[in-house]
Image 1 (cartoon, rainbow, N blue to C red):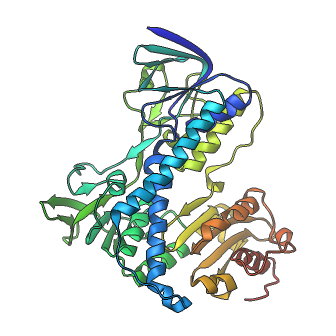
Image 2: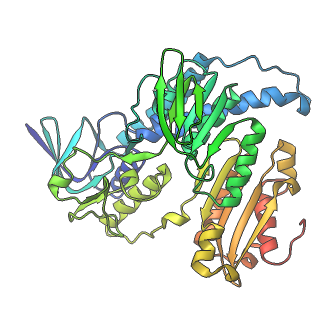
Image 3: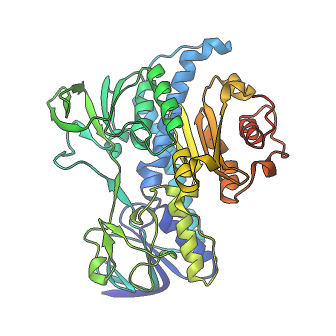
Length: 456
């Protein structure tokens, strides 16, 4: 048995865990970072980064098909899945190597192995006892399934979908949220027939309803089929494919079924409850400083109730490190954390939807405006349609921005600043947005909300 002592022990080296480690080390403290697999966690290895590599491959495939209208002679010859895999793995390997070097350069002690919380100040890793003045829990999440729906064979989650060595001809996707629509977008671009099954009334159901409706029209134009407001009943599989049965009696036949019904917190059998950490349906209960029910033990990322986003976990990690250092970091509410869905088309949003704004302020006290990207020069050039929708309180600030169209994820930074700093449209209207950019579409939207539209 061996014992090591640190100012901070972080259990889990995903986005939240490694951000906390880096920031606390930057503040001059000693840090142990414990990870059972690879530093970088889900986001780097089987989530954000590799899926966006697939989406870029899909975009290139679409561009090659459509190149003639841009005056470029080319031809789409199919998908070389081995080459796609090499490209994806190369991206991940490069980022992983860089992160390892960065952690080492900051003097952080990385410990490989499965950690278990054994007291408010100790984590056990094999025969090592790692002691910290404080502990941060950052163990991340796993792909959920439905009761009675067993993963295996041709019934897969996003992790297995990444590793497929073939392009399926027909795919059924259970779940029309971010993961489901992103993989659907990839497979359609690669030439597969795709059917999405979503129990709620809309695809990307957490977005503003206007955005969801635009999204559904866009997917319909792409030939992606979807069944909304209907629940999954069961699935059978054999060597050649799956048959998915819905509660209304319909069936969907496909080569594979992707189960994309969300992610659950990885907190079971890690000693949390035995150490006094309160859980609620598997999530760690925390206060406004992200401290658990055990003083000195904090939690960040996907195990904390709320949005499961890598950048949320990353910011929470920095936040806790600064709290522990005696600083006073600002809190960013979940509603003001930017969200991006990287399908074709992209969706990006921050702040309140129109429905939530009406609920909070009263429908008569808000104004919503939609700017059509058809009026934006750069959007026309790159061949995208879509809208930017902004909501303001009458005689008050902008409280929500919602966008759909190619590349709109790159616009979310300004939108977040506007919403989180409670800017009035009149505050933003004088600022110049470079021409020709899609960023101008945000400027036009805020001009309209300020009562002086130019191109609408």
